Length: 175
Image (cartoon, rainbow, N blue to C red; front, top):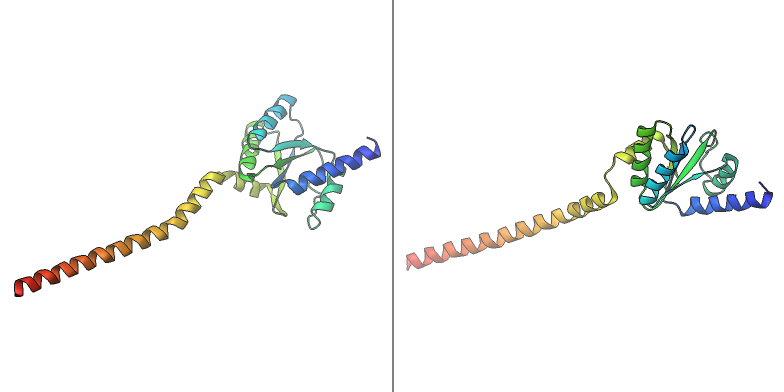
């Protein structure tokens, strides 16, 4: 590979690292071409993509983008990088499913919000509900106290009406 071509590749990787919502590093040794195509196609469905890279170029790009993280151990051996779109949970779920099915695709580590994640943490990501479910649960959690407050206030007003009605009845019987 010519020197300028390597510089361009490092530049592309830097941009991909900066613009991603998360990265997952995988060991793809022994992965058949048709299986790699299946993985790539499934990742496209969740707005992510798989990139097979030269470790030395990825390390140069990573050192510039992730200054506080040491990725030298992760970027040894056959490594591919999955660059996540907006939903890191769906991306990790796709990879987790394929790593269980194929047993040749192994998750090494990941990066989310400039924090290095172990393969076990990526597995935990995969077990989380999807983004829409989490947002729905958040909305329900926020809405619940408001509904309870409205119920309490309506109960107070209806109780006030009942008390006033009872006082009226007592006064009308006394007269």
